[in-house]
Length: 122
Image (cartoon, rainbow, N blue to C red; front, top):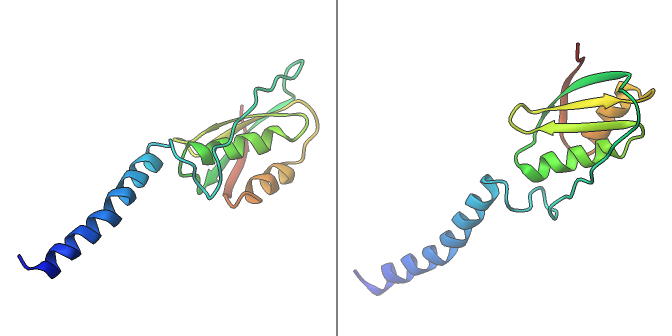
């Protein structure tokens, strides 16, 4: 093996090792995703029973941070409590008052995710 090949192997190792570590962390949902820090989702409770519950189908979520971003922003809408399931690519949104479905859709899509459907949970 000549010196040029050895230099190429060392350079590739220096580039690939951190990249692979970052990819593994990202795929496990442990790293920050989507260009931002890890989102924290505060617990939210509302009195009474929900008037209606929606299932919002969402494409584009890749990791735990994506899930947390959607959940946090939906929970900022009053009077809404949302739980997002990353594996199912959906949010269960409990409405404790009048909220337009369009408001839910706009909130999710403002985060650069795609709402593929909204249905009422029976």
